[in-house]
Length: 76
Image (cartoon, rainbow, N blue to C red; front, top):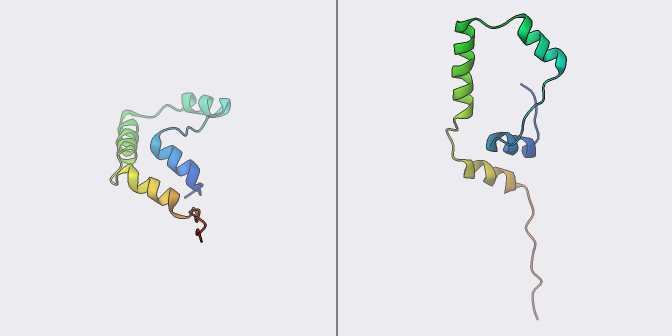
């Protein structure tokens, strides 16, 4: 499993992060097209991956977990 930063992870969950394919990747895909069975398996996996079992607010809370809060100075 590859590692990803928290910022990229949140972007990916929101749907803002997209990995760009190179030209050689595109040509490889067209040389060996998937069969209908492979395509359906991939589509079902993609649907499962895109469906969040946890609400997005929980992931946003994880993003803000490590951030420090500013302290106010006490007035004397």
